[in-house]
Amino acid sequence: MQNRYPQSGQYNELTDNIRAWAHDLGFQAAGITDTNLEEAETDLLNWLARGFHGQMDYMAKHGVKRSRPADLVAGTVRVISVRMNYSPSNVRDSWDVLNQGDRAFISRYALGRDYHKLLRRRLALLADRIRLAVAQFDGRVFVDSAPVLEVALASRAGLGWRGKHTLLLSQSAGSLFFLGEIYINLPLPVDEQETAHCGSCVRCIDVCPTQAIVAPYQLDARRCISYLTIELKGSIPVELRELIGNRIYGCDDCQLVCPWNRFARITLEPDFAVRNGLDDAGLVELFAWDEDEFRAKLAGSAIYRIGHEQWLRNIAVAMGNAPSSPAIVAALHGRAEHPSELVREHVIWALSRQSV
Image 1: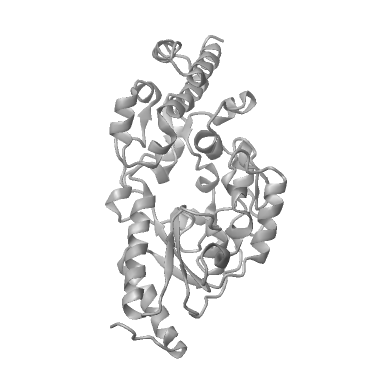
Image 2 (image 1 turned 90 degrees about the horizontal axis):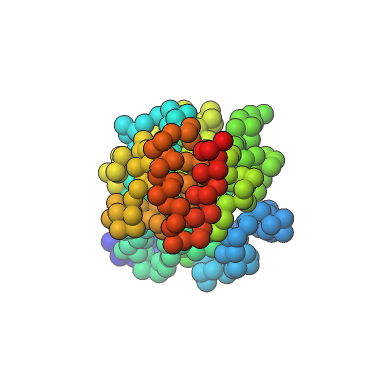
């Protein structure tokens, strides 16, 4: 099979095979784009200039390498973009959990195993198949592992369009999927970019608990609950704590109200199945986990990355927002002298709310 596609005239066949191989590896779609991200680069620079990235210094660290693939990986002329569904089956209804203040809401993408390793392995296998077919192939795999504008690339590759909430939307799959990329040196034919289909809908903007979507296609991450519970390492601004509700890891509200997610598909990947009952766990139960239990139960989970201290910080905020109960008050008092100043601060705030 080596060197089967030595000439550009045969790249159409190779492209068809890449789509088939991607499907065989569990990806629901694969598209190809060139490296022209001029419009996305302008948007990125404006977003950074407004400080919307907050403490995510890595968004600015690499300059325009994020929007210029060939600057990041020399020789790149095309990008293969793929998506994989993550919505697990038999999961507790999100709104039901959000409406029960003593339960913990966790973004549905994080209920199972960490997607990074699974997608990276599958993309590496896809790259290996291309390498077997084309001796001159060179490529590099990415899954949130480097400065890559994945939504812009996926949009240009025909996998969907950027919604007003800034996530990628697909007419056939909504937005409940992961994205991954392979930067390649082969001049494959590119796919047509899909037009936007949000129309006049602003449900995602209206539903955002903290009004982080400041305008269509513009997200102030500093107000986003996903940023506050995952990316922010220090104290959560007091004025935003009440708005977080019982969301202890991420927020799905903008996706829950999106009409296109009626087309979202259930994942077939066992790794994305719910673990440890995290789709419907009680705040008191999760707050009781010590560091060893946190590590044991969340090993291999995306949540593991935030660490036990931040986990307790987030749950303390949710408990401050929960309906008052002796169990919650007792649990908070049990952490009132925690070694971490960060945890203590949020526990004290929560107790002040519980005593009102």
